[in-house]
Image 1 (cartoon, rainbow, N blue to C red):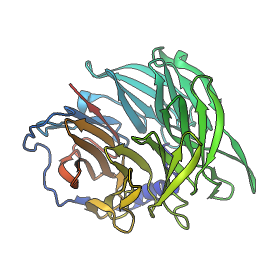
Image 2: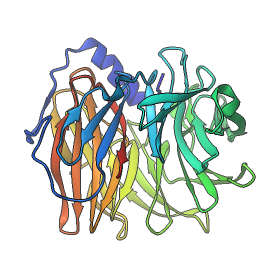
Image 3: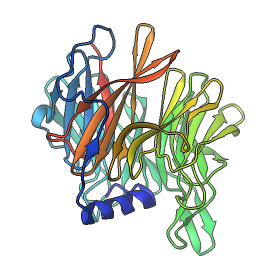
Image 4: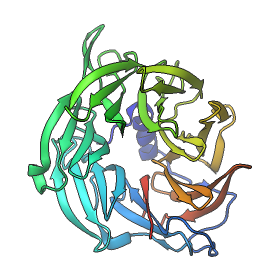
Length: 386
């Protein structure tokens, strides 16, 4: 099962018991939209968590292919990355026991799965980051490890080793670090450690593990200003930006900025709410928030470290009548312009991809695409270039 901590479990139960009424969106563009004459990514691939498939959007024409390649991904795709001619999909495993967890490698030319790398059932693989073409790190939330994978090898042979992450002394016993997001920068990997204490239904102080990618050793541990760090992104100045979600009821969202030289938090930006993922595109940190009545983003100007949108004034991409989740966002670069593509979903009733234009004069929504045909709960998006 893809465990997104407390609110996603609550949202899933709510979706099972309520009749979802769907999404109303002020932007009426759906399916095919007028062509846009610009350079940049040619296609967006959306990896869907609940429908176990991929949707595609032709960026130039706006044409939506609801079930790209008729591929079966999953079970429970969580994150995905496009690198070279392949897509790499992290599957957390089927509910409730997490069976079928692993990595699928998809050839983007043939639209075929060329490698399936199994990971332990119940380990809940969460996120991935490449060190090199032959070395890939994968966080496993429930096993409290980073798995080292050589994606050039086939099947189980691709799993090379594991890196154990810290275990903390909780009030009722040991508490694993519980890694989710991971990034690689400057010869080191950084993991966001959620520190969820199942015995007390609370959180240990938040941490980020630092791994030397040459030796695969954990060399440092950085404490965050808020509990439950879940995702990270590298800023244009090399700083590591960490989204701390909080505990969902008494402690709320914060964006910490880590200086990789001192390995310490140099600044923090209060966001409020319970944001879950981050992507930096151009001058902005885009932070997926979601909510019970809308598909929302928080936004921070990374140079000024100032809030553009937070929980008191979220960027509402679409209003909904039920819980909307925001998947992992992809940034796209064209000549003199930055774009971002935001996947959103309301379980069983609405799936959309929003195209954002991040211009110096202010960010705007340029288009949105209705994916609902065969797509359910978009988890992540990747961009293809010519």
